[in-house]
Image 1 (tube, one colour):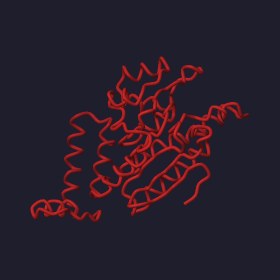
Image 2: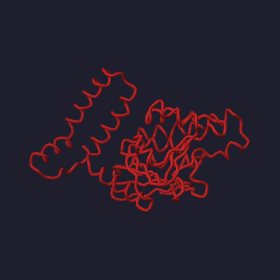
Image 3: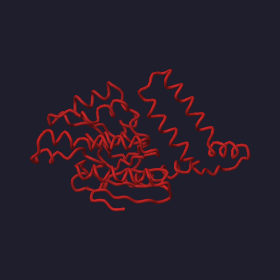
Image 4: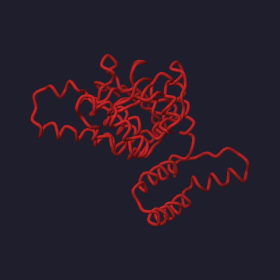
Length: 260
């Protein structure tokens, strides 16, 4: 599967999607966003894929955010507004992927790149990576990623980054709960892939139902969330994979999940 600015590979039930424009720090231009959306959609629709790794080419940047050079190109503000729909499409697709999404943060994740990283379910970061929203320094506010950042960091830390434009280190990101693991740059890709492959061994059906429920309840009030989750647990308990998991536990063996 080939795209202009994204690499796509599949191995051991894991799809690896790589932003591939390292000479410009993998910016989120129109073509990159279209390719990324198509690659995520391909992984979502491939039944053989049970987990996805998202990374950036090179060792300097995961993604430096939107392609600011594109703002200098002639276009009306209405056209620019319509083009930003590509960000919405990509961010929604990550949430609706139905499969675990592991971010391999191989370098700096800034602005829209930070938002894209936070769309991943789990993050493995190289120890030299940095994170931030520097938009304020060029007279822009991170509108397209603001709700994503706030959901992941909380109000005060999100506003700290929005208002100062400062970067935080991988260690600080780990302390803040922004990333799950920090490892050496030489092993970050293998670490992310191994984690995705490990997660891919579990029931793809239950993983999808649980992941979907996690995001579906994000904006619900407490009682509505509880009642929704009660129903989803019933759906899980009706699956063959649930029965297989219980049988394997009783029989003291490793379960064999089929996704049904």
